[in-house]
Amino acid sequence: MKYFLLITIGLFYFILNSNAQDTSYARKVLNELCSPKYAGRGYVEHGDKKAAAYIQNQFKSIGLKKVEGTYQQKFTFPVNTFPGKVIVKYNGQLLVAGRDYIINAGCKSYRYKGSINFSSIDNLKDSSFYDRIGYNQKMAVIDTFNTKYFGEAVLTNKKYLTDFKKELIVKLTNDKMTWTSAYEQDNKCIITLKSNVFDRNKPAEFDIEIESEFYGGYSEQGQLYGTYTSQNVLGMLEGTENRDSFIVFTAHYDHLGMMGSTAMFPGANDNASGIAMLLNLAKYFKAHPQKYNLLFIAFSGEETGLIGSQFYVKHPIIPLEKIHFLINIDLMGNGAEGVMAVNGATFKEQFNLLTKINTKNNYLPTVKARGRAQNSDHFYFSEAGVPCFFFYLMGPYPYYHDIDDKASAVPFTNFSNAFLLFRDFIIGLQP
Image 1 (cartoon, rainbow, N blue to C red):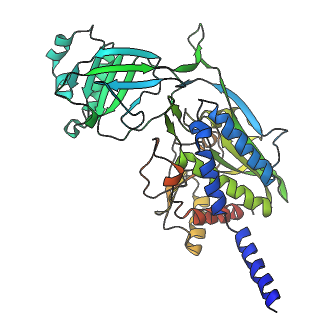
Image 2: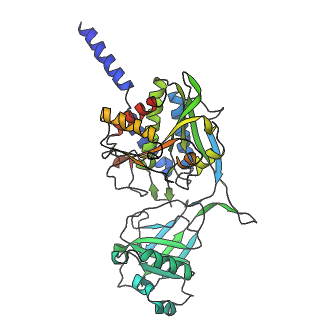
């Protein structure tokens, strides 16, 4: 009897776990993709290719099949990278990349050693200031951190950068060191420096050395072209009944990569957490086949301008007209305040189903809707007429596009309940 009871309890927990997401697996995926060997999943040290290989292996291990004979869809695009030196010294002190400063993502290779003039916003608003420094001054430090200039600083700086052909601008700020990605190179170097690092009462001596590598160029007709090859990763599960229709899950796996050899941007919440959710859904639906075919796509190039998803929409492996519904997943790190459904205000019938499921089961505190937004990989599908939602979780999380968006910082609050909501929603979409 005791033996039978143990078997029954074990079977109960097996069934329970097979119907819910595997948080330990999600954490394992997060830790893996944010580890140094992936170099921030950008385009330095082939971080994107290493991440794509890992995701492809997970697809194969779960049991997802190739899509039209392949797990990868390759594409080429332009991108600026920093595989070498990114060194900034101020008055002899070596500053910490990503912590004390960031450089503009489109920065060209640049070398400078010498003094730089200091300019406040008040200076820039004073027309006589322009006459005093002249058009030949090639460098300047601009103080933009004071909040009293809010509303004027952006336009004033834009005028300054446009009117004066500067090759180097150092901007002081109190804001977080938030980086981005660039598909072109700029004609100047812009360094955003923490204002508390800079002493306004002393001469400013800088020693700057930046090495960039641009994968691209311009044709004789002035058209931008790219030479970096990246890849989307695809896998599918066949449906049990309606095999001519697909429900598609998407999430981008790329992030910002490296700014030099020391500053890595791990991209845990954005968007290793989304890949963790996508893989969990794949595991569940492999064990629980659905009526419709399920297609899973991990996109590259999102941070550089939704490039991977745009390429798929232009070159679909599975025709767009066969997509019954698409769910794009991003920012799954903290759902303490619920979930946002971008396009929820557009596809009202599907949004009503989502809210009905959440109300019945009390999965998340709130389910909110937004309209059209060009803020993730759902966008080009939506523009092409594919019904879709972009889900992101809402909750306090202070790290975004910075060096502190690490796996250890992600709480995964309500990750399990978000999984259950997405699971039930997908099941409900299949008549």
